Length: 169
Image (cartoon, rainbow, N blue to C red; front, side):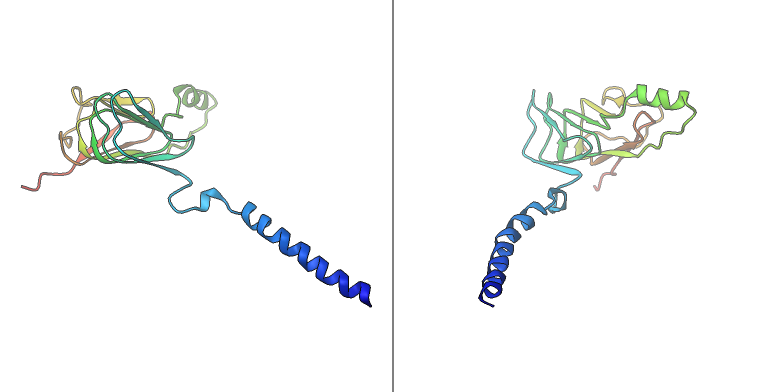
């Protein structure tokens, strides 16, 4: 009887020691609020600086992208400031993947991506292989205004759609 009584507390003691390790291993970093699918960057992106989101993620910049600065992401890009530099969304989309899918007669499902900023005066904005500059806006774009909150959207490699907020004067 004493052997069983001593065995039971030892088993419980071993389980208690193992429990914290299992609980710590079970934590998924993707479940932490603000993580998993979106990289957050706080501060301004300076000239010559490049901020690249991890593969498969979007990017949120709490600051501005200065001229000569560059932000890149596989997903969308959100800038809580001015975009004066370069923003490239959908960088994992390559034209070779699109052409191989077309050759095989497959329709490749494309997700619409966005570049959103509070003030738009970009050196370059791109979604996939399609790009535009402030000096040469795409043909037929009428909703584009410098220094206004702007959203650029479209599928990677497709036509870019621009929308700038109207002035509130």
